Length: 56
Image 1 (cartoon, rainbow, N blue to C red):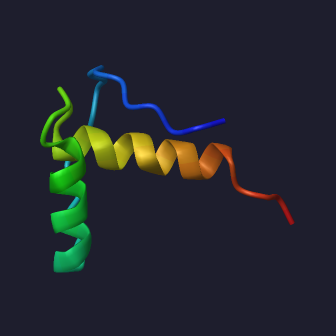
Image 2: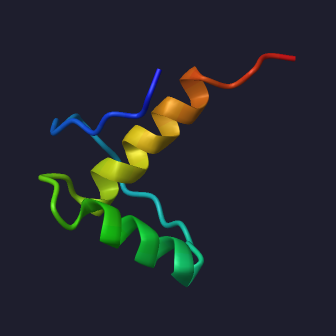
């Protein structure tokens, strides 16, 4: 299954997280033409990663 961005809002809580600058630049370049915020992209990417992890 491929990673597909979707625009949706859910109840949330603020967390502080540090990203390497090159990763921020890649994310911002990727979402530039999409209707998705930085936070929404990160949430969706984390959900995708968790759903597709290989269990040990």
